[in-house]
Image (cartoon, rainbow, N blue to C red; front, side, top):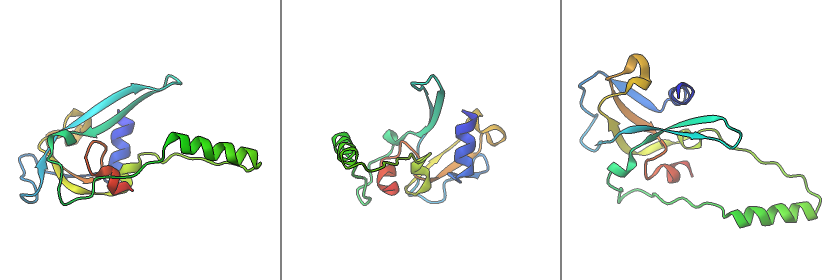
Length: 140
């Protein structure tokens, strides 16, 4: 969990304001943050901090759809490349969404214990954090 929080802090995902502060303007909507835990296939433990996007209204003025490739398309390209003797390279973008600015305006009234010395401070989410409805489109 510490690695996930530190990674998000390094990406500049949040702005911290003193406890009891008000959001920057009336357009900001209150949400929550949750840590989701999983065990990977190789038995590594993983945590991800996720915004409670289900608590926010779906924005009508924002694009929230982002296309994605179908698994069968990836398999087909792999088969074709193999038959043609081509080398294949692949990669993964760590914390992909947080490389984009968030188009949704959300804040968390009080930071939890996972934020250490910032506990109790108000958090403004500035990056496209997982869980927000427009994050996929923001990253795309």
